[in-house]
Image 1 (tube, rainbow, N blue to C red):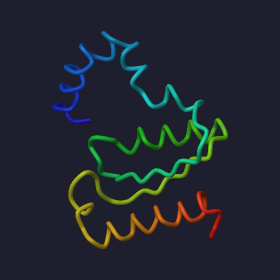
Image 2 (image 1 turned 120 degrees about the horizontal axis):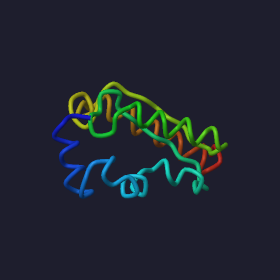
Image 3 (image 1 turned 30 degrees about the horizontal axis):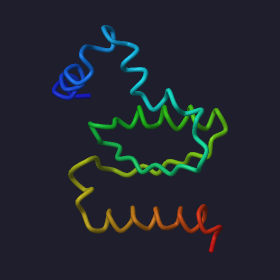
Amino acid sequence: MPNYLRALDTHLFGGTPQQKPDTYIAASPLTYVSNLQAPVYILAGTNDVRCPIEQVRSYVDRAQNEHKDVSLFEFESGHTGTFGNTATNIQLYNKIFDFVKEVVLGGG
């Protein structure tokens, strides 16, 4: 994570992870993996500085280890860049629609 985002987190959480571990733990999605009940489909950019792919993969791994129905589709982008590309957007929306058709509508 870039330094400016670390500084923002430090400000928002009132300290660093070492200073406020309970606050960071409470804010971490990893803390709540065991609560998942519905299937989850995650689209993640491999170059996303706000949600680093390593953190996303860690979440998915933990969820799958707990036998949660979590799938991950990685694409080469982040919050900017090719994410603004129409072809990429179409690809991502098609992935979402496929997930909804399969999981929500039962393949219909």
